[in-house]
Length: 285
Ligand code: FE
Image 1: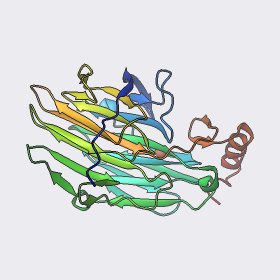
Image 2 (image 1 turned 180 degrees about the horizontal axis):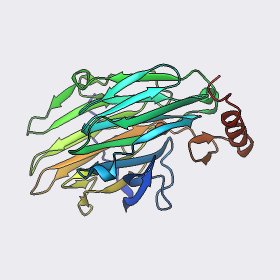
Image 3 (image 1 turned 45 degrees about the vertical axis):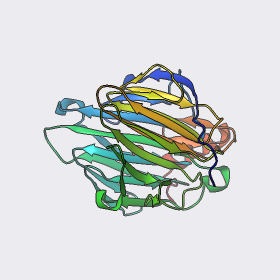
């Protein structure tokens, strides 16, 4: 029962880079960059955060995906999701949308506000070859459905996916069995987050700064920290201001990745097939 907690170390840290996507939404990309191309099974992490409508108002008009999953986690603001399967979802603060594109989906995410703060994340999760051409699926999860664990020393852990303590996140049936936690700590607070030993993972600091693992220098806001493979948890500590950290782990797929734009397959010929299917209107059939 009482196995000692061994924290993962940090293998790489990198600052998110400014980019834009969709019809011109400004983003900070921390995963899926030249510095950190992949943390198998995770392909990309974008943070969007702006109170200038020019940075987000164009939104993400209809576009395709095949071969993986897109996850939107909203912190502030509101967007409307619509897709080719007939799903609609209201992306509001604290909600998560876990969309399994599989063999093909065309969707849009458009702002439902004309001003004010828009803040959230988009995460891309790969699918194993066996599931890339499966049926699309959409999990639209209300903020109230995400359990929030209060830590003894103050702070909270929102359990989007996977498990923390005796609470289990509402996202289910995902091939890579991901864990996704939103960890908030007050000044001086700390937490030991258990992580399945078979998982790869990363932490992304989106408020304040956090000391991660064993004694490494604090990781500042807007930086990703890739976790080493040894250990069964992650020690997170806030400095003299509070911090908020997104912790994301999952089972590695360990297959070749062929990706271009909105498609993520195993081989180049499967990628070419995805583009051909999209052009001929067969992507979602
Ligand atoms: Fe998309």
